[in-house]
Image (cartoon, rainbow, N blue to C red):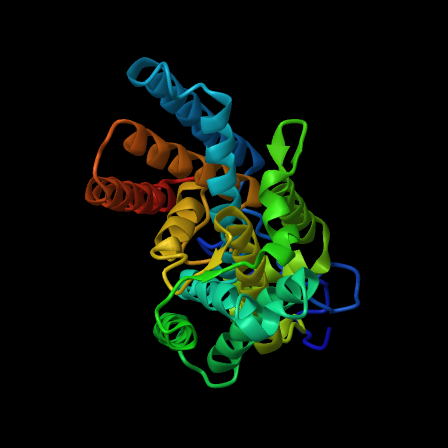
Length: 357
């Protein structure tokens, strides 16, 4: 770390720069003068646990609603597996989105980047090299799009909203151009891609385990590594993080690259589930991902959040979608409900921040 603080007196003292986001910069007593990394893992542990328990209660309530309204369809093994498979696609994207939002940004391009990755991976040229290259292509395209977005934000100094909105439009347009607006089928000889969705272990398809692995890795990185602590620091107070020696621009670039990587993995999952690559994949997934992150307790202003909360948010929204479908409600009704939930969640966040602690 390169930044230092010098106190005005001879006695060492501790100074902190803290705010609502949870960022902190402190000089340890004892003489080295080097500021510690800010910590801000989402507020008090007790409040996080209460929030998570609230989400679990919401899941139980939604399950009860499903059992009452559609007793013959909701509790079937096929429906449960379908819920988890859909949650896997959105959930992997949400893990990357959680990192970005905790780091003080936002990524509106996730659905379009996933679509582009799926189209690129299912072109005739790519499929001729086999399923391994298809999977690698999807991940590389997603990561590359994330890197480009990160460069525009970190070094081009575009605000995240504008940069990711531009990527949303450009990636969707490129996907349409490459596919000529046609759905591209995964060839039979590349059925190893489809096997990720059809092969089951303990009754669950492999895509669910991919989601679980990404979520577990995200939790470990966010909570047990220096990278995770720096993410909270950058989102909580970028200037304090810079003074603490963190390369804020490079870290922000890495966050968007990580989000793009998750989009590439999600593209692989949706290719496995649908055996297609399409420019229509991931439509409005950015809404679902951001909504899940907010519902999970992550602050839109950055510096606070949890992977566990985001995953619970994904399950809540996926279950709501499933209940709407089973009860024959229109897609427009789903969007209205999701929009209302987002507004309520943000209002509750603002109220919580204003409450005395």
